[in-house]
Image 1 (cartoon, one colour):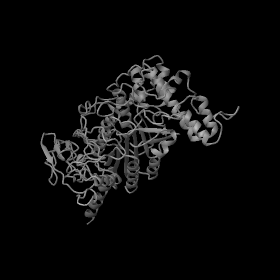
Image 2 (cartoon, rainbow, N blue to C red):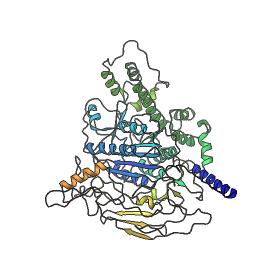
Image 3 (tube, rainbow, N blue to C red):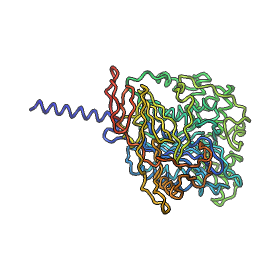
Image 4 (tube, helix red, strand yellow):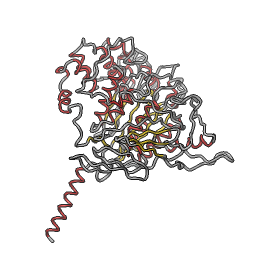
Length: 610
């Protein structure tokens, strides 16, 4: 009897240790995401946002996120999509990772960032608050929920066509301080804009998707390496930015114990990164300063290498960051002396109009009195050589006026070459349903990379269940083709079911339901309902999205928002999960178990994601 009791106690102890050792064992980590790509603007269409959103949505699906997404949203649908997501996050619990990605036009006004719907009419600065979506209205509620992490990515710092009359808007996005538990990321540094990409995808979305897929890379490391990759891809024309106050440890994908050694030696690279700038050669010093992305790091580079070919480029980065920090501190204080102090430093600065707006709101004169308490900024005023950059109407780092020398590529020690499938990404087929995101071919992650096992599997996610397989959706036939590493191919015909309650159209017309892509992210509930309404109004199946031009990016002429048969089905029911091991995956078909492979010698037994 005593022996049995000891055995029971030992088993309990082992079970307790196992639970303690597994992150989220008591409560699985839930991952949710909202992905928006606005390209079809009335004020001027953009090339890549819809494709970028489709790529990011698919990447997040592979990492275990329950993704909702849409493209070309007007003001009504955009606001409702964000509200739907905040409501969803409210009921998700504290062990939730929430991810928002928005690509399109962004603007800043008086220290706030706004995301612009496709039907926005922003003729003057006073139209911004009424026509665009203020981001802080949604980041603050997310922060108040005290989720495990909230990640907000604005791929929206572009030269915009708005506010052509009256006081100008400052270019790019505003430097802001993230709330506790939040990471904020921009495709271009505060106060700067990215050049518009001519390829099928923007460099920021492509780099971010690549780094998310990197097994074992911590959250901040994903965005640091994204900045280095974008610097390489754009030859320095685009410098992304992020700031994080997320204390929790988070990886998008794990790296298996039997994985081959990483291309970058973690220990050797960490040792170099920790060294002072003065102890590095010029190329390493530039890359380390760029990776750190701090005013101090860039200033250290100039102190050591003032005559290096990269020095002029670094001065422009410093000029933008110094001005952005100065304006942010001015706006936080929000007093007449603070705005007079900013105008004394930057009389022609990008935020001079913002400062005068605030002075008018505070009912004081633009010109300061003979004496006033000048604000102490804890950083020196700009030297004369920086003013040339600040006076540009829009600051972009490939401006030919500056004559910048392209930066050297990041050494392999800091950034491994991109995987072959990310060297040239094929454009996705055009979406065939209103609001639906375009979905590229899903390229598998290596067999030694998998979503963390403590992540709760998202519902109806064929990408997640085939993370090591190639997945192709045919928009015309509404079929999904899954190919495993052995070359076995299976074609799946998703069941056609209503994704929302069918609504009757005009007399004699068939009922219609909200269109949902076969493997793409579901539409946000309010957007799906809007799609139902629009399709009901035109039961013939051709629908033009509201308030936008008929010809959309990535759509063939004459096919605006065309709905093809079968696209009103629900997302594909999740087949059995593939093994989480280093063994090659097999193609999966609905309702059948995947073929099993014998684990490699020394590999752990196949396990279903938990």
